[in-house]
Length: 101
Image (cartoon, rainbow, N blue to C red):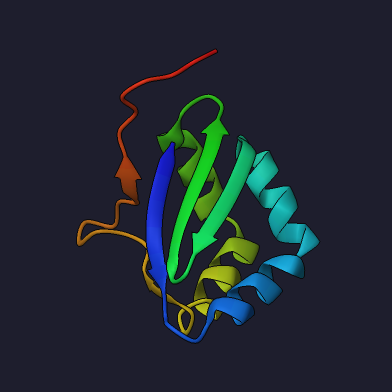
């Protein structure tokens, strides 16, 4: 899955700093939920994320959603992230149009 979101202008350094210091328990929760090959890229206030999951996105997010560390992380980022999801709570995802193995 590839997705995008925005951070508040002026929060670029803080966004990077928080990820440089990501909590080990959150990393464990992400991996345990089935996420792998997870990357975030930033240009200005725009962030694009990419990850792969097993067995599927819905299951992975259900597992991660039960994590206390993930809930704390989401709360901690409310002052940094403008929008992460649409009005229905879905990631602002990109649809794949081509892939090279």
